Image (cartoon, rainbow, N blue to C red; front, side):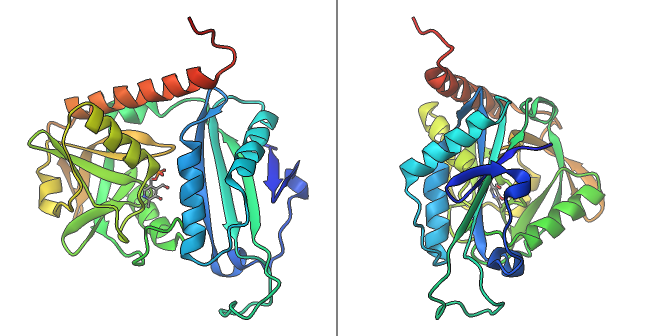
Length: 298
Ligand code: PLP
C-alpha cells in the first residue's frame, strides 16, 4: 500500500523517499525510532513519544535539530495525508551519510535523516486483549542500553522469532533471574493486589504505555511497585500482562519454559488487568473525543 512519507521536513510519495546506502542507519543501525498510535484521526500521547525520541537521540549523540512543535505539525500533516483514521506512525532518525567507518566524531558534515510514515491499523487488538497471549520465557540476550529506542533490534528480532516459531506471541525476557521486559513490550504482574514491573533503568525501555498504566493505576489506587521481580514470581503470578503502543495491554495467560507449557493464574484475563484495560480505553476515547472536531461536546 502506498502512503506518503515525511522525509526531513517534506512530505513526498513513498517512491521519492530515498536515502543513501551509506546512511549510517543502513550500515550500523546508527539511529533511533518511535512508534506512535493514532485513533480517530488523533495521535495518542504524541508529546511523550517526541520527548523520548529526542532523549534517545541525545543518548547516542545525534544532534536533535528538530523543533518539537514543528514535528507535531509535520506529523499531523502526514496523518491528514493518510486516508485512514486509525493506525500508527513509524518514525526514525539516523545519524546521516558518510563513508562507512565506525568513527564519526571527526565528521563535520553529517546531516541526520528523519523519515516518517503511517500504517493502517483499523482495529485495536481486541482478540489478544480479551483472550490473552502465550509467551516464551527466555534469556535476555540484548545489550545494556535498552533504555534507548535504538534501531539496533537484532536481539529482539531473534527472540521474537524464536517465540513465534513456538507459536508464542511474545518473548518475555529475564536477566540474572529477574524479568526485564518483552522483546517489544513491557511486562507487569499482579501480586498481592499490587502491580509489579521492572524499574525504568538501562535494562528496559520505559514504555509510554507503561507510564500511562502507572498513572492510571495511581488514579485507581492500585499500588505499583517498580521493583524487579523474579522468574519465579512471574511463574506464580495470579495475573500478568504486556504493554506497548500497538499491541496495547495484553493478558499473558500461558508461557513456555524449557519446551513445557504452563498457565498464568487461571489461564484467563484477570480482573485487575481488565480494570486497567478499561481505564486505558477510556483515556483513548476521551483524548480522541477531545481533539476530534466532529464530536460535539455538551
Ligand atoms: N519495550 C521494548 C523493548 C519495546 O520495543 C517497546 C515498544 O516497541 C516497549 C517496551 C513498549 O513501549 P511503548 O509503550 O512506548 O510502545
